[in-house]
Length: 514
Image (cartoon, rainbow, N blue to C red; front, side):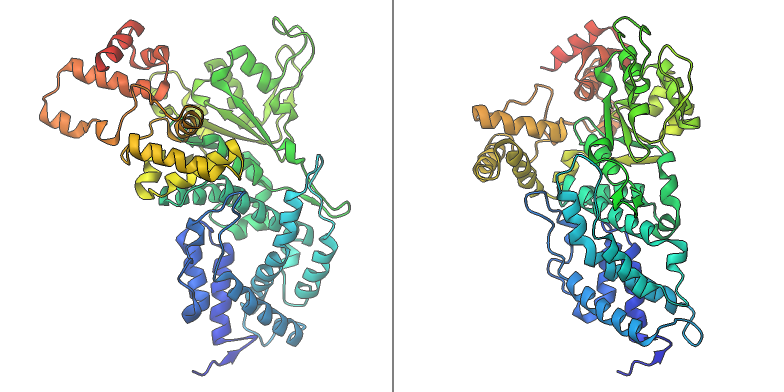
């Protein structure tokens, strides 16, 4: 087959370069990434193990191999060097989009050359900022390849900004890939959703400057209790853009000062306000000294995580709404205005729209919270799609509890017990948190006893069939509804509040079930 040359690229090279461009800006956790790899390699595409984005690694096992990436990298390196040698200037007789193709090939080549160094920076034990003494090497390389007539990439994205962008892409990939374990499609969709929350759907726009404004967008994470919403929030926080100071060779922000979690349900309203906004001495009983809150301590690159936001008191909702609207706040007991510079991520297992209808949650606050929304899947959804993930998850928990040497034996013992005693259809109503409890119990006592309200998937009523048949009494409906709400709240008072029932009635209905 003859491949004609028009401009810098032959027709075959142009098709390859266009596929690499799509690969660069594709969400790595969506099928589009693998489709771009396939398009780039055509007949040379290796199908075995190609779905690496569904096979996440962990800190212990590392990332799964990407069988096609090495082939693409070699071809890109050859093409970049040929063009950079043969074309000191790109323009004139060359095709109009040759400059953009060439720039994208350089981005791909240089990024992958520096991934190992980025990994070393992330792995280094440091109490200060991330250091990058290799920036001068990077600068020399991008200047050699991109600082030529006709290529405008460095005009719209200076080298230090490009370096920061590369470092963020690598950090985000590792944090999302390793912290969210499982090969199911629901988990792959969750990773893809987090990636989009970090970079948006248009990474070119993000790279051109949107990265500097992403802190203004609040993310709301929803999902059942125990589904790992804090892990999602942490992945978001640790994946944020960190500006690079080329003069000192440092990225902004300290690794230990990027994530500030606060569980609202665990504190009284006064303590929640104090933790968030800070207080002046004497502002309330026990306020013995002036204290800065999370909103004040959090740097521009940091993230404040408000867990269980559905529990927040109405008076605090008003103050948080002001933070989201104007970034302004005041310490308790003083009038001096202060400004929040970071980003807010919130999470809840409540139906906030239902809370709005009952008047317990402000609608304007809700709309400010959910400029971006992520839903964490339940464990039963993950295991229904990929049953083998149960063994994978148990292995991760076992390594945390007993270390690498003992983990395989403990994981085998736990998996055998679960398969024998609970069976494949156990619904895990407590999600990943319940699985952790199960592993600990079996490690200590060689058994696990689920809560009386826990059940198998078949125990969940088929409400459509029940309502259509009209065979249940009102008492039966109320009993099962009480059980369903209590399974989420794990608190009789909260169940009674949500159902507008006396707590004695709730207790009676729970006893009727057992």
